[in-house]
Amino acid sequence: MQLKKELGEWFGNARGDILAGLVSSFAVIPEVVGFCIVADISPMMGLYASFWLTVLLAFLGGRPAMAAAGSMALVIVSLVRDYGPEYLMAAAVLCGVIMFFLGVLKVGNLIKLIPNSVQIGFVDALAILIFTSQLGNFEGEGWPMYALVVLGMVIIYLFPRITKAVPSTLVAVIIVTAIAIFTGAPVRTIGDMGSITAALPAFHIPDVPLTMETLRIILPYSVSLALVGLVETLLTSKVIDEMTDTEGDRNRECRGLGLANIVSGFFSGTCGCAMIGQAIVNVNSGGRGRLSNFVSGSFLMVLIFILNDLMVQIPLAALVAVMI
Image 1 (cartoon, one colour):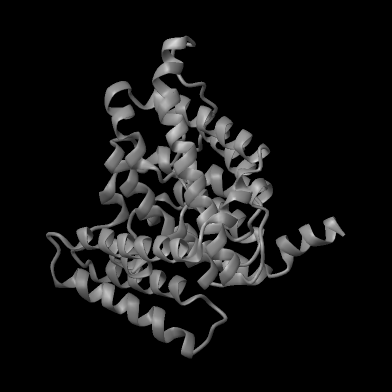
Image 2 (cartoon, helix red, strand yellow; image 1 turned 120 degrees about the vertical axis):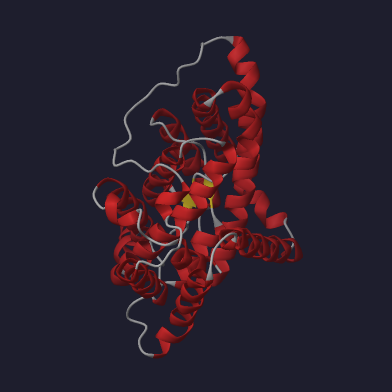
């Protein structure tokens, strides 16, 4: 029975999950790169984290179709500024350990105590933050940026009237990107946001002293990261539960997120958690199963490693339209 359930979570909606995974892999890039710029770290650290978190949670997580990424920039700004990215990777490993043991202690059950009004406030506040965070992308831009964003939004809202076989968000990204490239529109691209190199993540033990002083430095950050990450992840899980009329295993999600952060920290990545914006893009694009998570993370690495030259030409206008 359990095997049948797992297979259903993987292949019960294969076509929709594959298409949704492609869409969410595009959507995660500008947000993650933006977080990395805020934290003053290489964009590759956030992209590597997004790959590990999304792919590993496809196997280890308790909530199918929930996107995750390296996204907790505000918590790590002072750590990176004062001690550097190596301490950040060490903090990510310790954060993962804390998350895992909180999952073992079944803290995921506490989400049931959060009232519906808090959940509504959480979602609405994030919607406002996601919208306002896109406004900065218009600074210094001319009319082509506005025109492409409007075009992308029109496609997203009207294309489903023609067919729902292909996610309208994916169609919008492809069409807007093609127009920007062939017309030479003077708009910013993903490549303008930071250096994105065609390289696979390699195993790397954080270069920090194994002393109590190091633990004293990273422990407060790791605890903060674990708590912030789990709260956002569990609330996002609850939202996706209601959107899909299913229920995930929240304690398994905590444990899986912890293990994924440990791996990310050892492969040159930062720490991360569920991202409600990408999760909703995934679900609204037809994602329902674990295959959507796997495709999203895998295709993100394909974009980075194989299609790097094409990825850096994707205009921000296309992704801004998706996020709005």
